[in-house]
Image (cartoon, rainbow, N blue to C red; front, side):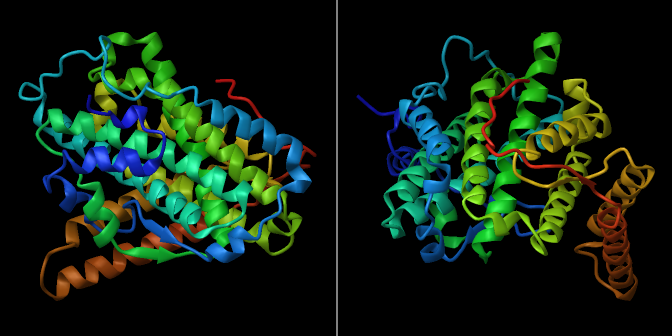
Length: 368
């Protein structure tokens, strides 16, 4: 009997299942390197292997027990709730944007799997290697499930090829913590917001994959909890000059989401979602969650906030239009767009942040 990636016990098993099925159909899109595209990361694995989780042992064991129990084993595969999808009859712009969404999501999930799997392979710290093995397992299942959906559209991402050929970006461990923590928590906020919206408006659910978002976002939530605990083991990570780095990553992650979502107007229109309003709702949820470990949140109600997100988004549109064009005029247009995007980012970053007291225990449960 053939194994499905949803039933795999490890990331390696899930990836092996996918490699038997995949060609190179959508891999070129996943290989693209732009400012907004998901990236593959590497880091100082020895430093991460030296983490001592004893200061957070009670919360750590609680989280590990939940992850080892594997509540979502077998969930990420098609069943009787998977409705037929008329890909040929789908409106062309919606189809293009939705496929782009799936490929980007698959690449993002798999980038986490690759990082986590490498940490497990290189490490000897039992606590740390167990965590990263469990998170790699989850991310591999997610990526495999998205690939199942893509195959129905006649495309798929070759995950094994990505592992070997996609460019890797080096981040210090603390930057991995900030970026990955926010990626997991904002992923939870995004998926649960869409899931609850479609619960209220099932007629807008144009693809069955959205039915799986609740369990999916609960995995993301648990992964975010793990990174909150890792940061809690070293108080320096959330104090002093590192608060400025936290603010940088908060601003970068939120701004990237806003700009990327505005690249898919047909996708959001089909869902009945305004991307600007959706963004604010996701930012508010993510900010509330991040209070568990970060001593600041961004002031997303400040008048400068949305104004400069719009400016950044417009600069990105202009950059995209000028990219690939030859000539002096196109070069000037690209330089101008990049400069305007940088100015908008600085304007966002310099908005005074909101300070608060971080709780003694970061433990949270998903409530939305």
